[in-house]
Image (cartoon, rainbow, N blue to C red; front, side, top):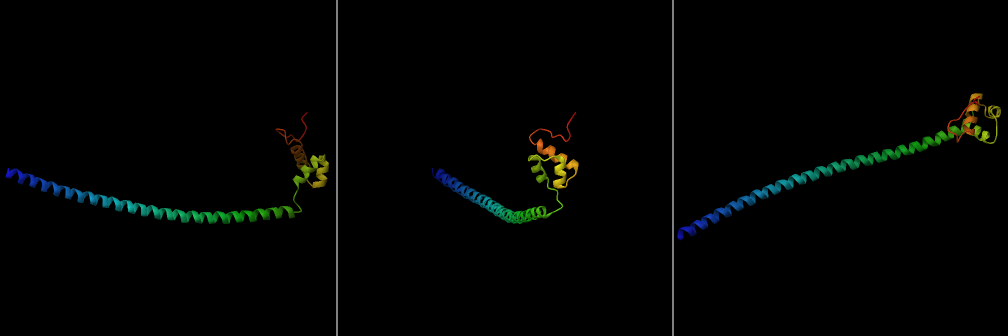
Length: 137
């Protein structure tokens, strides 16, 4: 009986040692996993910060380009308004709507006959599918 008590205590001691070793191995594994995850989170944070700075730069550039576009649109409008040699097709279209003929358009707007015929045809047939320049026979 004494032999069995000693055997039981020896087995118990071995099991306790094995459990302690297993606990140490598990703790190291957890610490390693935790370090890997911490490094991954740090890397992702750096990537996110880089993307954030890049998108802010792109945003600033977009705003700058929008301002340039607005300025160019204003300049284009001014150039269109101040160009005396510019043919006013919108004025010609308005005259056609008021009943002006091709000859009237040529005289009033200073455009050639083909241009006057085109403006007249496009304006008169605005709601038709295909405008015609000369009447078909």
